Image (cartoon, rainbow, N blue to C red):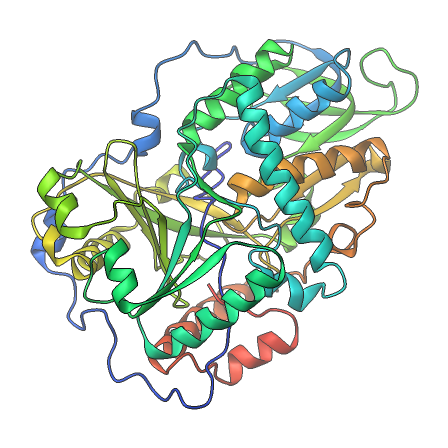
Length: 511
């Protein structure tokens, strides 16, 4: 969701990485139609706007001026998404006298920050199971740090007066196949172990929350989960940063960076120079929050695969439609297949519905050209929403869009420094960045400033994911993995040889 700073649809649900148990055989049938989407399915979104709904609803604001001419600063932040905005606020809170300059290639909230689903999770590891599999000796600490950051985010929004429609109705993960019920049982036991408030629901209990013929059971998590209007969150963070004295330049894409022996902001010693079309910035320190876009540090490109996600948003539901589908609790919803959907209600009772397909294009290009290039995914989503809620047969979609997710092989962010420690980065959120970026921004700042903390001492921060192979192997491996994940959904969740091999090498793709 970032084209100069399009960071992709950065908030997909944490996945449940369970395995099918003995006793659950092959699924008898898929819950999804076997026929291709119809003309009626396509007609529902034919007139939909390609502008994200969140941005359409965002009040107008005066733009921040592009960089014009040379500038010097103590800290230059590249990228005006959530990572960059949180980093700016963290830096000014720690040292109000520190000069901070932020460069955004497009406009604030134009990238992932205005294109995601608005799901906020306390998880720093894309789910407890994923984190425990990779860092079993650190998962207790990481869960605590995640919950602390989640609470800190809530407090920061209150302190800065940011109205982003924050609500905590819980998240409901839904089983649509018998084998998925075992996954939910395992996930509930694990969540309780780490202090989460969760409740297992049977089919009748789920029906009292959300009415659909597909649901066999569910797991309702009430802690560490929230919903927001992400564009209003980004706009609120921008306003808070400006009030704190951060200098922000929109339409100022960073074109490159290099070591600068002359120092930045009048300081002695080496610094970094960032080139833009409008001028050059000399900075003592640089923090990169570039997400799925081609990184200014070429080495990061080995670890990131930009994967496109697509979203539909309906017209506001009528009182009769709301009554027909229930959903009075307004929980965030997701099904727990490998090819999963995520869905939620907006403040004006529209349904945001996304996921299922994850589209990788050869070479991993990130461009506005691809934001509305999800015709087949849009058609599938349209067909599936009506399959879930037959009462919405006549619904129309008013918005459709896509964006690139900064996917890495471990599914949660990684960190590092470059150019002698004067550059730091936090990337690879893999669709779970609305909450985790607050934590990631602080970690990157701590690395940049040489502060040792509980977080920076962890292997979670000190290690990197396995890199993706170069093309054409990268594209072939990703497409094969998508194919095998779909096959596992059709086969009672059983992971075949290819997926088991990925698991063995720490590349256990499950979403």
